[in-house]
Length: 442
Image 1 (cartoon, one colour):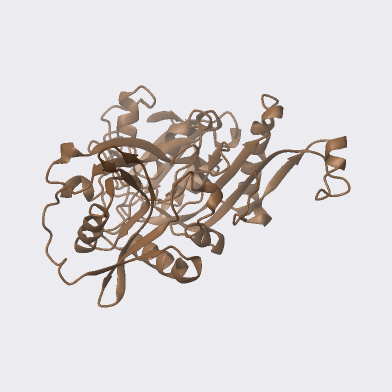
Image 2: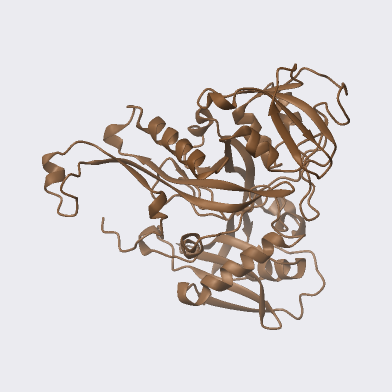
């Protein structure tokens, strides 16, 4: 198949695994003089300001992980991951994150599912509860054009992430690089999978964009007439009125029968606006997977709601320097000190489950009910307040409750808003999302 497009990669962060020279590679005019067959590849996107509870940390977004099918089961994937971990350490990135094309793969490398998203199909014409302020909003629908819409999409997405009622939740991150921003307005024909060209619906207030959705349509002519499905890739709004107006447009496009939206927050506004919630078909899906590369740096890089003095015993087979007991001391919303200790642990967990709880979308209390976290100091407060499993809370960001070790689960969901891995490779992280999700997703 001829590819008529070029994906935006961070080439300086891209690594290939090349085998020995073969007659086939020698015949490849595009290969270098010493190049053999390309066996595997991986890349990453840099995030210098990735939001975590109460702060920001540097994160490496692993993407485009793929191994040639003729060379699987030879340890190449493990070597790729180990190389990625080494690069993270050298770049001073204490956290790695990704969207998993195949979710079963990455747990064994210490990645934990830190945020989920919602996929929902809503029938055309579904009634919405009224919201004030929609009457002054205007909408325009255009064919998505990178030259016209890159800045608009990037700016609205950034503003939504910093707005206290917007996408400020576990798994969300700004698109910091040109490659990421351009990726989200690209529309290569080779990846449309029978759908039409991508379009964008823009909601404006006084000439300024306050919401947008990018979408495509598929066409099916049945006996009763056309049955087009509207497939959204992103649905972003800065306020409730704009969200209501945007969904009203998506649910009322001519010659369509339903809207299939993906990578929404698990508590997206559409779940509350529907007059008849049972008319929708929701499905929860994995979104951002997190791996702590440097446990003390990662834990000290975020904030905690309550005063904290707790010892965590962490297991990590791939990065032994993370293994052992770590004492975390912090004042509420203040500076954090993390140091190795020989003190008896209060909690014991794998680095995978610590990563799952890191962003605040998953609680350690919840993991404990599944037997994945062990509490050694049940309900005790020997070194300070809120020490036991049910009492430690993460700092909130911009009014969003992000309880991780509290009894009340955090309002979950991710709005990373990222596309699937077009390569069908092992993983993809091109976060906002997305954030958006990866693999064999729509």
